Every structure is written in C-alpha cells, then in structure tokens.
Image 1 (cartoon, rainbow, N blue to C red):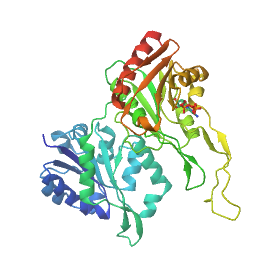
Image 2: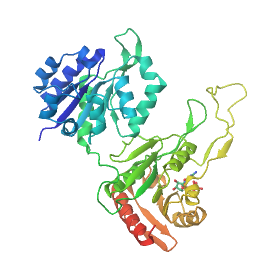
Image 3: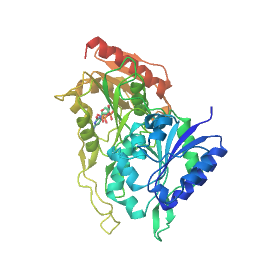
Image 4: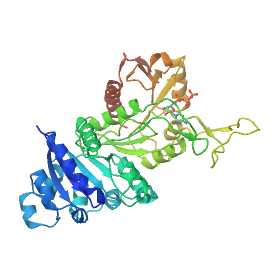
Length: 409
Ligand code: CTP
C-alpha cells in the first residue's frame, strides 16, 4: 500500500521548497495530505498545495466543515508519518511544550505516529539555547530530525538553519518509513511487563577533558537500546537513559540523552521509582577531576597530567537506594575471568542479576551485532548461545518478566 504522509508546512521563507517536496513524494507513489499553518499561508498558498497534493488542505482547528469530513484526531493518525517542513522555531517550541492552540500543534500532540522535522530558521534562532533545548526535548520524545543544513541564508547571513533540500528530506522520510512508525502508548501494550516501569541505561558516557576532548569507550548502545525496545514491546513503560550513541531512539520509549556519568545518575534517580533497573551502559569509571573551560594547548611544559577521580557507581547507588527497584540488573563487560568478575560484581554492587559478557576485541561484541552472555545470579550461572543483540534483549526481557512475577517485586 502506498505510504501516506501528513505534511505540516510552517511559516518560513523556505516554505516554497515544501511544494517541490510534495512533488518528489508523489513521484515516489506516496500520498500527501497537507496542513498549512497561519504563518505558512503567508509564504505558500493553499491552492498550490491542494493542486500538488490533489487533496484538501487543512488550515483551521475549529472548522466545522473540515471537522465534519475528517476530525482532527483522525487527521493526526491517518498517515504513516508526520513531516514538518519547514519546522520553524515557533512550531518546535510549541511542540516541545505540548501546546495545542492551532491545528498543527494539536495534530503533533494527538498523533500516534512518528514525527520527522526539517527545521528552517535564521542561524541565531537555530543556535539560541531555547531552540536547542526544545530540539533536545523533542529528540528525547522520539521526534526525528533532518537538517538543518549549513549555508547562505535568505536573510544574508551564513551558517546552520537552512531547510534541507527536498531530496534529503525524501531520503529521511524513506528511512523513517523503513522502521516502525507507530508509537505505542507508554505502558498500554499488552504483554508480560504490562503495568511495569523499567529504567534502562545504554551507551557510553563521555567525560570532558576540555571543551573539545573527552574520555569515552567503544560501547555502541545497541544492546541497551534493544533491551529498552524489547521491554516496551513486552508492555512496560520504559525510560531509556542513554549516553552519546548513533543508534536511533527506540519507538515507544521515553529517551533521556546525557553525556557524563554524573548526568546519567541524575537522570536515573529522577526516573525512579521503577520495578526493574537494567544498567547496560558502559559508564566511565573515572572523569578528569578538573576539566578545564579553555582548550588545552601544547606548550614547553610538556603534556598535561590528567588527574582522574572516580565517578559515582550508578548500579550500586540504585541497588542501595531508598527507592530500590524490585529487580536490579547489571552488566559486566570483561576481557578475562568473565564469570569470576561477574560474581564479584553481583555481590559488591548488591544487584539481583549480572549479564556478563566477554568484550575482548576478538569477540567483536563492542559495536557488533551479536553477543554471548552468561546470566549470573546468587543461584548460579547460565550460559546462553551466541545470539543477536535483539534476541539477547528479548530473552532477557522474558526472563525479567518471569523473575518479577516470581519474586512479587
Ligand atoms: N556501572 C555503573 N556506574 C559506574 C560503573 C559501572 O552503574 N560508574 C555499571 C554498569 O552499567 C554495569 C556494571 O556497573 O551494569 C558493571 O560495569 P563494568 O564496567 O563491567 O564494571 P565496573 O564496576 O566499572 O568494574 P571494572 O571496570 O573494574 O571491571
């Protein structure tokens, strides 16, 4: 079946490109229903959008005639993907705040589909902390972004803020459509974890040395993200606290993006209480005690000495927390004596289960797609065959659902 796009056209000088975008999408056999904001109508006419989409253009929230033909809730869901192009600073701010005072913002709040935004605005507006905050919030809520590009702007300035070219937006739309675009209501999926709240950490942490350098590790976030996705699929309400990764946010999961171990701990504590905690992140053990504000320069005194201090242990903190989840699961990334180290970690960090894996370079686990894990509990050790990270996640989630039920946690 041909894919259906709900295109929201915001008000900006680049709105004319949305007309070309419609043409490109229709060439690819997609149907496009357009929503034109009040500001958008200052730049393109409803007539040209109607002509190119071949459909009625929606403009008003409170339109009795339009509502009689198709209610705004139905309009928000009767598509495979919602695209905002151009996405103005104002539209993004409204979406980040959850406003619903016009048709476009109401649709963004009411939709159960993924939203792809193509921002377009003056570079100072784009770089303003308020816009960057809104974008970070929206990314955390699962909104996808394409662009903005860099270059000469209609206002005569040069920098980031240009609407991506229509073909780039088409490629982003095709990529989004290739994944699952329906967002389940948190906790509303039936499944063995229905009604449970799960916190998962994933990815590495980055610990700053100076404004341009940091300490990191090779964790990709693939395993942690797969666990968050599997837990959501099993009906749980999931909060995923992720360090910097390139894997996309899983659908149906609330994602909180952090950089450092201390930020990760703060986000995890803010997400408590929960029924299950899964610490899959490769948290940096140390940070630079005194990260400097200016870039370190080479000089006659030789290389700088980085004084390291220990980071808080998030897993151990959660396991001894006043709001301790019923089930606390840690990972153990080891390069030798995998089981011995995992057993020691289980006891030292007071958790209920450790998923231990060998991360020696030869195994290809770090960044790879497969994993061989051992489940270590007080009762013993169980070794699983080599599985894809998705399958490890599914099996682990099934096990957690059983454990949570058994222990009445
Ligand atoms: N962990 C954590 N906070 C830290 C370090 C680790 O929450 N500061 C968690 C990880 O998320 C993982 C588990 O502890 O679930 C084990 O991580 P790992 O790096 O294997 O162990 P470490 O405690 O760092 O011990 P070591 O580096 O000495 O092996």
